[in-house]
Amino acid sequence: MTGREQPPVPLLFLISDTGGGHRSAAQAVAQALERALPGRFAPVIHDPLVSPDCPRWLRWFVGLYSPIIRWCPWLWGILWRAYGSPRTLNWLRRTLLSQAYRTVGAAVAACRPAVIVAFHPMTAEPAVRVRDRTAALLPVVTVITDLITVHLAWRDAAVDRVVVPSAVIAARCAQDGMPEGRYVEIGLPVAAEFCLPPLSEPERHALQRSLGLRGRFLVVLTGGAEGSGGLYRRTAAILRTADDVDVAVICGRNEALRRRLTRLARRKRAGGRLAVRGFVSNMPDWLRCADIVVGKAGPGTIAEATCCGAPLILTSYLPGQEEGNAEFVVDAGAGCYAPRPRLLAAEIGRLRRDPAALARMRAASARAGRPGAATDIAYLLAEVAGDNIALERAASPDIHLVQLTE
Image (cartoon, rainbow, N blue to C red; front, side):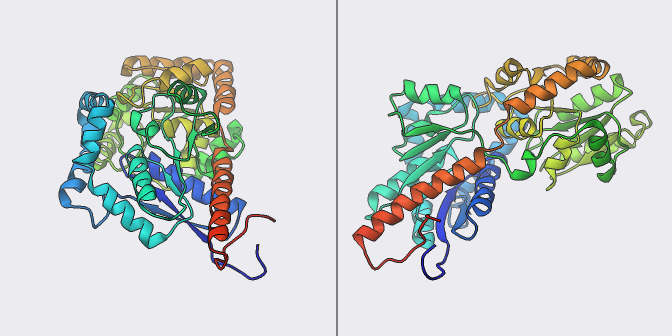
């Protein structure tokens, strides 16, 4: 710190609320910055695709993501691949997403950040464009929030650094010809609350009781922020087949699913074993107290569950960016893949009867997690911001900002 107290250095985090993973990753890094370097940085999280100054048609277009992945994920797969070539991706940027350049520019002018960080693939290239059109020495960093399969939009923008979550994506960056040192494999950032030591069985049951459950063998189903992945059919299959487990379903923003499951919970056959929640703020508690976590192969769910050391049964994946995630979990020994409700119920029954297999899966899940990713990314951003501040000082000696040396 310099001789007198200085205001925190602003950083601009660009996200899109298509799903919850991009915002969650940005919040995790913001939290890690404050924990590691308290008071030195002021991250501003901004969604340039649905900000109030965006035209209504752009907000409507971005809003199609949620219903598409719920009702026709195959269509999303087609779109994801269609915009995976340089020609079609550039067309998308010049037309439907052209307003993002203006909104990112307005956010940079308002925030005056030391670094721009893109947590969504469609925000990296607009950030680079703003950087190149201004005289400011403004570094741009991309934090990839997909786990195994990565879209071209994550990789083609001329950013200064790229944070990748896995060795698979690091290899893809190298294959693209990205210079070594421009990308760094760190992991997918999750909040510190997911990164506490795994609980013992009695501790898990005690935490379950604090959440209003009975404190027995618990299966937690989650479909991410959008509550996708056919959760109703899978919940019903578990209740029909596995009568010695409790079930909790986290529905996210899917209110229709929550209402249907609430009616199912009231039926006699549920036997008081089904708990239904909407969008929750204590997701770490639900994952840490689970004996098994069931859900689609979303990167955020996998990163959070493995940091909690929770065994996973993956039931589906979104075509496109989630392809390869289930194979990653299975290969790590952290879970299994059960795409059909009947197979899911059978896998739960098998693991319920085989505590040793479940314990091995739990240990493998903990090994696959990267609980230090958010902190490592925070220090990387501090380094990049410090370099930028030093350059600005050299250009303008009167500028007085935070130094990063202790």
